[in-house]
Image 1 (cartoon, rainbow, N blue to C red):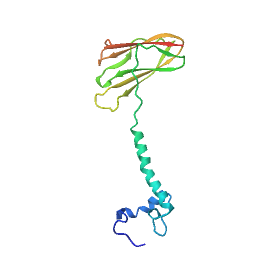
Image 2: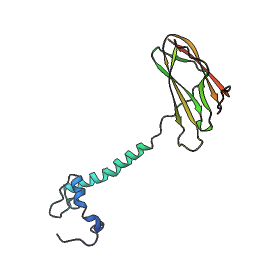
Image 3: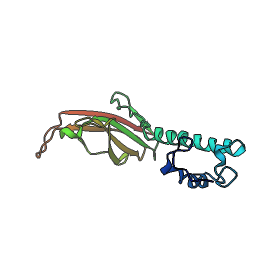
Image 4: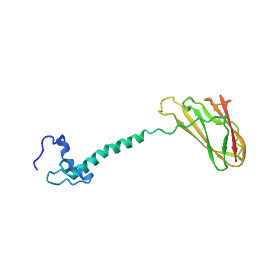
Amino acid sequence: MEAVSTSWRGIPPQLYGRIPALFDKLGLDSEGTDAYPAFTNGKKQGNAMKKILFLPLLIALALSACGAKQPELQVSDPAQPIEAAAGDEFTIVLDANPSTGYHWELVEELDAGVVQFVSRDYSADQPVTIGSGGVDVWTFQAVGAGETQITLGYYPPSNDPEEPQQTVTFTVTVK
């Protein structure tokens, strides 16, 4: 085989030497009558082309998964009672925007015999931009049978405890 100084079938000369490594990665034989059987007629051409065409499809699929949207969290309606079985966890979702300094807090102590606080997380709206809001997700665990209320207050930014600007009360029944 003679040295190639110009492009061979559209392959720039600087990349031509890398073709054997590509064939090795694809599991193809880079030796043969024409040196690169994927570019000749025969069975290996079909296999190589399938593998070469499959690669961009695989990359596109992987990249599309990166942009998958997270499921939207529905803001909880305080007019709808919450029912849970003892031992189950449930969530309360509230609109929030911590970039303003406002924040949700429990206004009253929980009835520890009925529910317990588990966690509070913030989920930003997508796409995230400066000043955009999101939701606070409060998770509680139903402990024992009974009915109680969970009251949350939306407090303004302040170093001194103040009254909340807004309150919401949820009725919880544990069976």
